[in-house]
Image: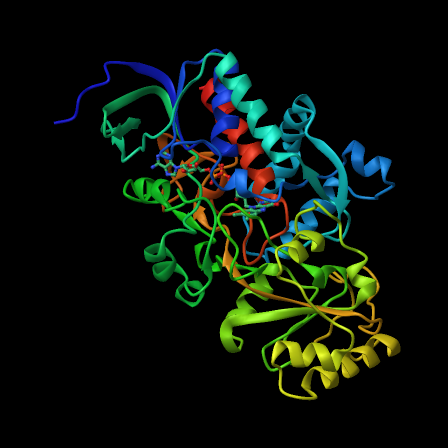
Length: 453
Ligand SMILES: Cc1cc2nc3c(=O)[nH]c(=O)nc-3n(C[C@H](O)[C@H](O)[C@H](O)COP(=O)(O)OP(=O)(O)OC[C@H]3O[C@@H](n4cnc5c(N)ncnc54)[C@H](O)[C@@H]3O)c2cc1C
């Protein structure tokens, strides 16, 4: 028998990553009583492991760097990246309400000056935010506003009163919510069962992401008839060393700085400027399901120490970067059949010098942006990397006000969702930084919707 907690609150938030903390803070700031439950012993989830890149347009950082971007271009890039599958109402809402995110980052003082073009972007829109400072700030503000945060307590089910979601069930009993429950429980990158069910061709990717990302919120809402969006497009991210630990963010995308990707036979297999999600799928079908990022000292000099995705110093410290004085020596060090890598690099360099006829149609560093560089200046480097399931971008169907929709698009009263548990924003592929932006923006949005109703 479960023990009743004997306490009602206005709102309950399930999950203490960025989306959940943002919702909790905003609910409390609106004067609602709110309890957040987090099943792990500490808050943070995948958000705390992330690179901290946020996709944002029209920021002071962009203006300061002379970057030409606009909300319309941000929207158009997301639509293009999603291949027409993403829900444009949600994308429109994301762009319109990014002010929510910018305001919180401002208050937290969590900006850095790092700004770059990354996957899916045609302008420098990926802003590096001090993610731990941001999370700590929101948690502090939430507690100060009166929110109750309970760790080591999982929501096991949603309580349905016959008309609406009225609370959650935990091992300690039922907790009732008068106004709404926000699912912010993250994705399912750690659920082999759900990956095999939805995207069996991706199930061989290295499991990564927060340990709590087992799809709990998805299952709970699914049991009430929730619709799902983008779920078949979930894909791993290419660029992680096979020996990466849970605590070390070790993704490198030297290809966006000029590297080529070659498989274990020393052959290229894709346009390296594509999204690391598209490349992740391509790498899963290569021999040994891995690919080397091969580059020269010109690209090596583009490393940004301390900047996720571009930090080669850290990777060298970890002993994961192979270097050699010539391509032949690099080929030997990697165990690639004699002459293959030299031939691949030779062909690639010719197409760069001629500025045309790349066999995979590569025309730029990232997403077609930035001039290509030949692999020609010694010493040479290789980083062996695999596809990791860092996050899952499909999830529950939601309306732009963060309310969860059933399969028939009717609303499940009392139920809201934000962050990685939600689908519809990414479609077929993924723009760097949109996962964190969506978590922050729609965490706040879910709270505002509940406060209004
Ligand atoms: C290595 C890595 C790098 C990344 N880099 C970036 C990046 O630079 N930019 C970007 O935009 N995205 C990035 N992502 C993706 C991004 O971090 C996530 O999509 C985002 O942080 C999800 O936020 P969230 O709040 O929805 O979920 P999370 O931060 O995962 O939080 C969900 C929380 O819910 C808890 N939970 C789960 N089930 C229950 C339950 N039943 N009861 C109670 N609690 C529960 C979990 O334990 C977890 O703490 C990265 C991901 C990884 C893993």
